[in-house]
Image 1 (cartoon, rainbow, N blue to C red):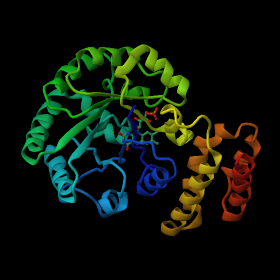
Image 2: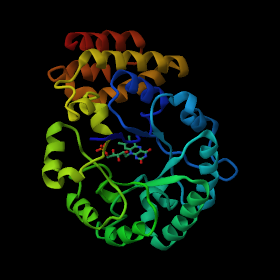
Image 3: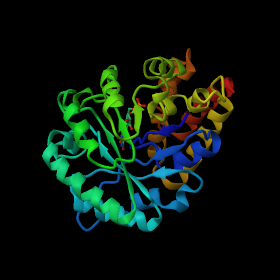
Length: 314
Ligand SMILES: Cc1cc2nc3c(=O)[nH]c(=O)nc-3n(C[C@H](O)[C@H](O)[C@H](O)COP(=O)(O)O)c2cc1C
């Protein structure tokens, strides 16, 4: 089974990817959080630093682009091609209000004729530059039945992989994914499919697998892999329990690496505290400690709690 690490803006940048990959592995592809090209600036220096192959050695990375302008997409794609990338991903799922208001992300799904001419442009570029382009999409903007038209549209391009997060924009990341539409895609898609959404445990995967069988491969997971970084190993049958020694290593690596590049201290703590909101369920019975940890404003306060929680489990 292949497992893809979903892009999570704010979290899965190169420091996280490298730390995760060296400690846990078991990921077949990582997708970068989106690059947002602008006029005359296809890729910012900060985005470039995250993407350059030197900062992603030994892992399979697919850069993701968020735009509704085919000329911007192609300008960024050419730069990525020059860096050595042969596969890119288009974001058709971001539900954020500011992104959708500009007709990007999930907002692009609302205008299928604009999307069609955009896809015409980027896939003819792709053919000329030997570039693979995958799509990461929701079912639609305001109604899941929009997916029927979108499926036909996607079928008319050489989409290298179609990653489906079976929700609409207004679902954001809440509620149950609308699995029946993934079943429809399995019947009608001409492109290889990837399922994404709410795989937090092996049981979640087993339920999906009962419904979709061997077609459920590859899968993409985001929040589930953050919340339990051992999940990929568990899904692949290589680990049976959450490995807290590895979690401690992941924690320490990220904490030290973020300290090297971020200031003031509180910014490092914001990053770490965000991770702890995902890790919280692994520390059942420590609600009060976690509450204090999520309020920590100084390294000393943070470390006293974080190291105790991690040592108790390891
Ligand atoms: C904090 C956060 C940031 C995200 N950033 C991105 C992003 O940059 N690009 C993208 O395609 N999806 C992004 N997503 C969506 C995830 O990639 C994924 O599709 C979603 O979380 C559902 O999968 P999951 O249930 O496995 O987490 C983000 C989601 C969250 C919660």
